[in-house]
Image (cartoon, rainbow, N blue to C red; front, side):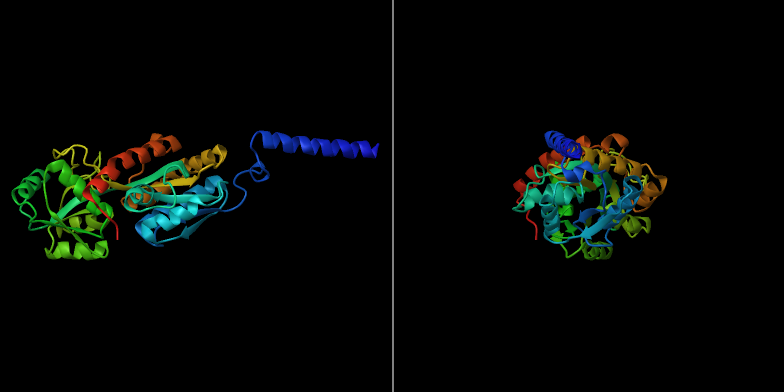
Length: 332
């Protein structure tokens, strides 16, 4: 009798394994997800603006996931080392690739990558967005964007626009502006945005396409001037600065958005769980305040889905890759 009971037990266990295999549920995913800490690979230095966003969102996600999220900062090659490591990770939901426009879009046109920024990943959610603005030295004669464009057209190749380095969004957005307005000016690459802003304050360069977080304090101090924000809507942090749309240059948008991906093949159940944790985090008043305090724009709820992120990434590739390749822009 005991032999028959043992046989029934073995047959039952085999049936469970067979059913799990039939529906693609392995031993790891048969557990409640997540059952252990999650690693978020961040391609930026610790303490920087993008790293700060990652840590704020990770803190917010912990409450929903009931697991810790460990931040792993992996820098180098404009983020491609970190994204490449994430692409090679196990597709089990325990490795997140944090990044955005630079690492997951622009790098595809600037570098010969050993991974595919689209086909090697599954999108999870858009987290935050930091638009750029057009800033200039105080002695620039133009008082608004229309006058700036007119001045640049009348003085081709005379103005100098500072960038934090070759191949950065500052340069690429500047080329986009030139293409959109029929203007020409020179780019001056620096070894970091701080050096460029110092020369803008001193009047040694004329203008910059810069992120709001970098330039807004100087705009508020009236040491430089701002002509327009490159976004569809005015910023919560600077509602007095008009958009380029309002100033007569429609569609001139450029921003550093941040998002999460997971390796290709990650179960949809894990992706949905992670996306739900992001939605919960971004609806938390404390998280929202921490993000807006560092001039981050929080995407609307309908833009916080995997489908919306996939659509955004595709649109950004179609927009920026031709600009980079036609202009021959390269990264250092």
